[in-house]
Length: 546
Ligand code: ZN
Image 1 (cartoon, protein in one colour):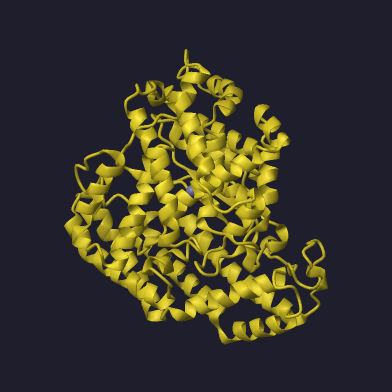
Image 2 (cartoon, rainbow, N blue to C red; image 1 turned 180 degrees about the horizontal axis):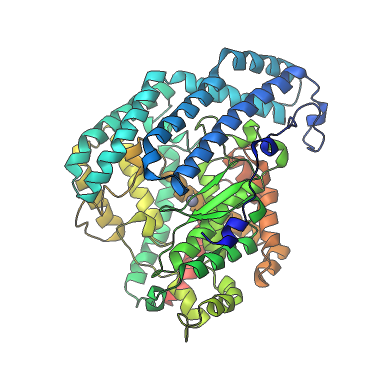
């Protein structure tokens, strides 16, 4: 790791790190949302209790970050136990009798406040989370975690050998456990709705159907038309780009977009991710391929979008349920996985892959890599990083075909959970959908049904958020660019007005409002794919001259 990247990290001693104020409590005055009036000690004690849950979850995140960035392989077994213990402690602390007593007291004390006040929103969210966890028997939680940890080893081996049969029994068990989980959680229409609740509250199989239909209708003709055009050249992206310079440039762009390295740092990992330990320590990682430069650059811009969401959450929400996912047991300020993904997609795709961005920043990239980019102009570079090529692997897919990978997964998962698709029929169903959506033959299970890690860890119901994020990003970007300050900023490589617009309308709210409330307030409408489809149509018509 370079000195520059390590230099962005401020090591805090445990004592420095202790938060001594009680956010949102009676003594809190910096927040304007009616909190000054809360003069009740019970509510304050309740918030402190929630702060402890947040502390446990942040400690879990730190151990998880360490496991992915620094830990020697030998630490894996004991680390898995440590992570499991902290998760159980956080859950137990949340549902404990003492928490429920404090919650009741807080509810009574705040009953006279408006139903949408911060205090009553927090009480409501905590009650909902407690009820959610109490519906799921502890034995089932343990069983799923156990199958998940065994599953990952079996899946890794099965994937390496492209042998679905080896993974099938553990996947069968995972599906059954998730079916059981769905019955415990409860649902109105479809068991899959219960599983999605943890990641994308409010989203259902029924609500996704019209969304997916619009995307298919809007995007499939574009994919087909592009397939008949000549592909832009990308050969120069495969030249050797030194790792250090790639990281330095990527971090420079991240900072330009607003990432505060005084409250963040960039590390290298196999799979890029963002993680926050409160808004004051929000870390990102990237992976570098010295022969495919876009990977680390756009990976970093993607994680930067996630990081901005966390870094610019209202400071008054630190350690409160408004910066804690109490259902998923994860210390995060973003309101849903989809909302989080909207920020990563927006900064990666709408900003980072735009022609305007490269007209302003390509000179700097070329100066960093004069040999590799000799004779390549801005237009050629911009076309190359936006090339469309339907592929078999989701994580390597381009902006235009990505949603088809998501749709097929969501449709398959929902069918596995309601029993209309059997696990044994999975490879066949998978391959048929890849053919239908992407026009490709799947040569083996490694490049097909075995490619994602999600099922091996016991997770079902996580995929829709990627597409929700894309759609939200299109909608938010369209609204943001109605503001002339934002437009002028984008036209002069000043990304502060855009970041501030997102902070004002999305980041600062943390989990204060639902995803749909945020969208309504920011854009004046519910989730609507029109703007996203327009963005893709316009961009790719330009690039491919169709
Ligand atoms: Zn992401």
